[in-house]
Image (cartoon, rainbow, N blue to C red; front, side):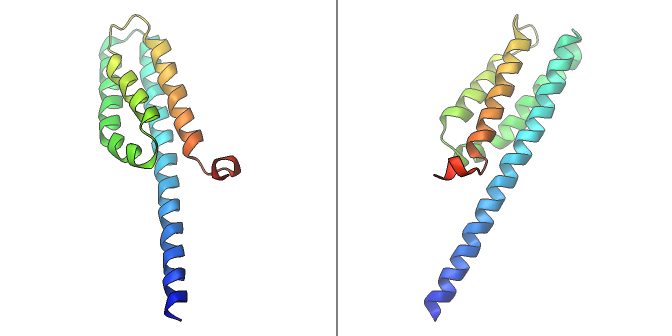
Length: 121
């Protein structure tokens, strides 16, 4: 009987951990997309002060989430996103394209970590 209780508790804990991961990934994707969109809007408007503030916001958010994302997924994609974030600056000649690339990588990270039938099997 003790084994059945242990198995039940283990399954509940595993399900809770999976749910927490999915909520974290979803929240990260949504918030990062908002921050990148705000930076892209500032870049289109050629407002350097606002763009600088938005880029600092993206970097600060990334710095706070990077370590956990590396625990939840392979390091390749988070490392590429982080390298892209570190490479952009206010006077970057192709900043809009770089922000679009970072947004696309963020979408790929979400799709790779999001629970789908294809990701399970």
